[in-house]
Image 1 (cartoon, one colour):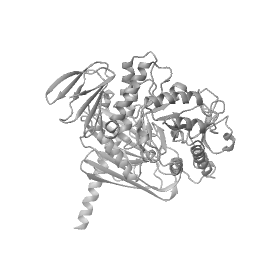
Image 2 (cartoon, rainbow, N blue to C red):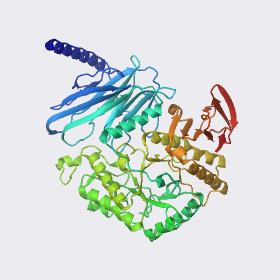
Image 3 (tube, one colour):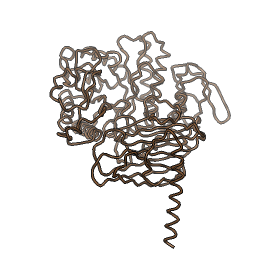
Image 4 (tube, rainbow, N blue to C red):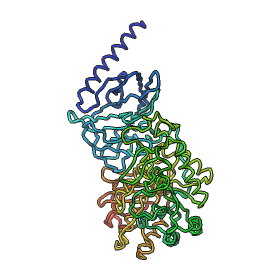
Length: 602
């Protein structure tokens, strides 16, 4: 009997193998190579095919576990001795039934459903984006969410529609860049086919990614959720201690609680390049006594943070010669080189920079920029040197160690330290050492700010999400100043207007909205978050707590759902119109809400 069962199993595997191979080979844009593991059956997608074009001595195994509309695909590969890992791809399809859009964590926030023409249209790694992708319909409903447990190494993804037959094709590609030798590797892919609110599927996927790797997010203190003033957009590199202090006095009077001193404090050069980064000493012509300046601002009731470009050492800095031979690559356009964190002395140098600044100037936090510039451009320079002097071979692993060392050292001195990172380095691993994630730069672009905040809110859990710094023309109307703020209101609003120059009526708008965001912070930033219709640029976003629902409207001719009986409903109007339609059951009514303002509706 046992022999008969074995024979049946073997025949079944062979038949499945043959069918899947035919399906995979019929796609002219799928990566070709050798099928290296048994083809996996799935109840959510068609068969799952694992392919490698250079398997060498690597042996693969794979399995699928099913649980309530979700599947976990486990992939393991082993080699008899450490060697370069085999490139491999995971390929599967499913019918394009009700699928009209895609979502990724890319900063562009585009939802275009592309054709599957083979090229990678998304990639992720430790310090850029995350391997999380969703296909959804036009009614805020998930059709398939794909999450990968690989939060550290590069994962490339090709996602789109196959022209012949309108199947959705997905291919995840592993080890497409230089990698240190290893003898064992495993990863998991989570397929979520539940028809549920699209944003909840994203949140569940991120939670799974964190749990799968045992990652713990750095706690965000309450100060991380306070309104903030940034020097960047209005000052750029033209900052001085006197000018910043004057702005902070006005900011504090309006209710802002933190300031970020951005680029320019360390250089007299104003060309926006990074040729003078690396020494990180205040230029005395701009900041005569940094510790006294910081203390004066803190007396106003504001936290003080300062900007550093972490990996850059400028060609014109004193530090440049010191680290010769310890760079990953040169960036001549930026006028600098990128440090190689695999050298322990490089990591020690960077940690000491921030620790000494924290102690010497009594800072409250750091804006640590350009983490996503760590990486390899072409061949790994360490290979020719047989990794001499490096105690870690993998760059992403070294960045992970570096940032853990930085955050641990700073927290040991100041447990409530504030650490801001910028989109796109916002993945599960990054949450271990950053507690403020800011939307990527989009000066003057309220819509992009709104969309980037929404994306970050879905993927950041308890980490504080910040808007990009908002600014506006001095001739703008108060109504449109209010609209800019409403577009940023589901994140911590960062302001970067030159407060000494803007009209009094603009200051009144800022003060009004800071009061509103402080009063409703629990709902806006800590409660259930529902951004609707990403394919339309989020025309309606809402947040709901136990006591109230706050709905922001960004487009004319939309319908707002009334709050449940007993809950307060606040409508924030950035639509350009003053008429908002509210629906309760089958009944519709129109209310007037001034544009750029808010109204409580009963």
